[in-house]
Amino acid sequence: MNFTQLKKLIIHADTKIVMLIMDGLGGLPIEIGGKTELETANTPTMDALAEHSALGLSSPAGPGIAVGSGPGHLAVFGFDPFEYEIGRGALEVLGVDIDLLPGDVAARGNFCTINERGNITDRRAGRLATTEAFELVKILGEIKLNGVEFIIKPIKEHRFAFVIRGKGLGSDLRDTDPLLNGIAPMQTAGLDDASKRTASIVNQFVNKAKFLLAGKYPANMILLRGFDRLPEVPQYKDLFGLNAAAIAVNGMYKGVSRLVGMSVLPVEGITMEDEFAALEKNWKDYDFFYLHIKQTDTHGEDGDVLKKIKVIEDVDTLIPRLIALNPDVIIITGDHSSPACMKSHSWHPVPLLIYSKNVREDGIKEFGERACSRGSLGIIPAKDIMLIAMANAMRLAKYGA
Ligand code: ZN
Image 1 (cartoon, rainbow, N blue to C red):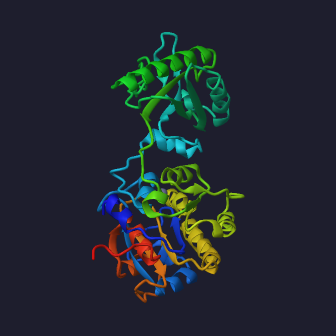
Image 2 (image 1 turned 120 degrees about the horizontal axis):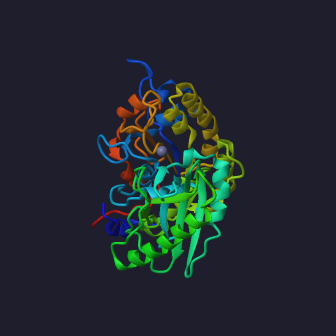
Image 3 (image 1 turned 90 degrees about the horizontal axis):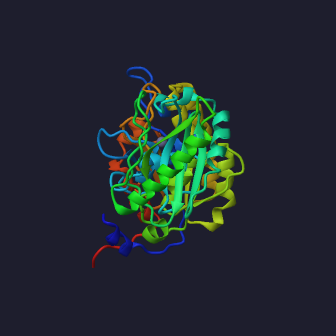
């Protein structure tokens, strides 16, 4: 549905929606003919909830497409991930908790090694220790240029996030990283007028960095690539009429939720219990909550079946705290699948549960891949989940007379 039409259907109701995202939830049988991680996990609470819910499978970006967590999240939040593309530079920046603003230009940075002739000998500066990168990033932080602000944060080893903030910047910039050893880093260049001005600023920055890093072998130069900015995405308040809050520990998820207009709630600690405590603490103040569980994906990507199962079971023991708040709609799904046996994100549709007192119950007493494939929702695009949730929350009016 187009957003102009959708906005006309939005009505107010005093109802609350909770979206619980277990990152990379979907899996595959651990052995041929066996059960998946979710099917193996002992999940009495989710199974009981499933009986009174509509089940289905959610497809983040269409058949056969495996997605990263950025597009996967935009999809479950209600957006077409191909229409609203978050570039790699912007994602990296969001991932280190830089509060990226509209108009900021972001890039991925590397410390690298150049020889006395200025040619690159190691694009990763020997993968220098993250602690050393911290010191070098401080040096880059001393660079000042008129009219703009630079925000630089270490990511890991030789990598850092780079942001320029200022008026009238452009983001159509060529990488300075030639992706090869043996030649000099390139100057960036801009395609349009705003990007040309921005390119000149970036080149001045890089020249100053080269000067300041001269004695810091092996990290004696920098490379920048993947320049881009945040897409402009409709805001939850405007689009859905929802006062929405996000509960997440990792930076990228906070960033993507902020992008769609959610308030990012403080979490006192880093555990799942801390996240549920934040949900309880802020329950009165919002009508939509997104709660993100990261570890399902981490263990899926590590190929650690048992740990992924354990995280799912741990989440199950916390869900009674959510149910006790008496939300009108509960959505449980993932942003994509991360089967432990593949050690990566995959294209497989993700188990989806939508509970409300208005839902047409499927009566299936299990939350798992095969149980969900028998559910009444079928396989739906992830971007449609919010429409079903809004309807169940009595927040969508009838279309037409
Ligand atoms: Zn993910």
